[in-house]
Image 1: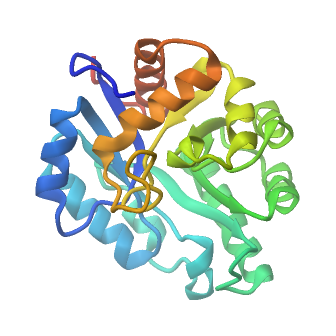
Image 2 (image 1 turned 60 degrees about the vertical axis):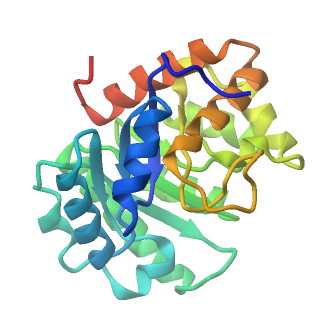
Length: 254
């Protein structure tokens, strides 16, 4: 099931690369009129800014992914002043791969939470196999007013804990996977106005494109799966997630 061309979609989290010209064009043809390309370290944050400057309807985030936490935050804060930068992140904890020591991940995540609070900017969170530790950092630092758990992979309990802290849940192609019943259950329990949709492209292509290189045009499939889980229409999901993304990132795309 795909969305009609008359719907407007917002891919709240993607990683645009060297093929951005073609990818952005195909996204527009699919009804995706807004997307945020994500910084994961200093170099990738700079690249995200440069990409966002090239295209209408594309914005960037600046941050350090937990995998890269061992390299620190030097230079990150200065990039937040750019006009195309709309959020801090993606930041968080990843205890599955442990590419950076866990104590370093915690320190770098806490510093980025503080940075989002100081700047009054949204925070984009990545968490994997570290829910309690992620909540502990947020509770200690103070949850930024605008916070999203990107590529949400938890179940209803984790979803409720995020929502209780005022955060949004952003659903990726995982919501279409056969074995992701917990994620669909979390979507079913998430108010429509508290959800975003994303691709996390080029990763995690949704069914029916699983195993292929993902791109923002595929956010329509994510939206259709979220609609099914929530028991509402695709049109409703497109409209609500578009409006929520614009509000979250403080964008005027009316």
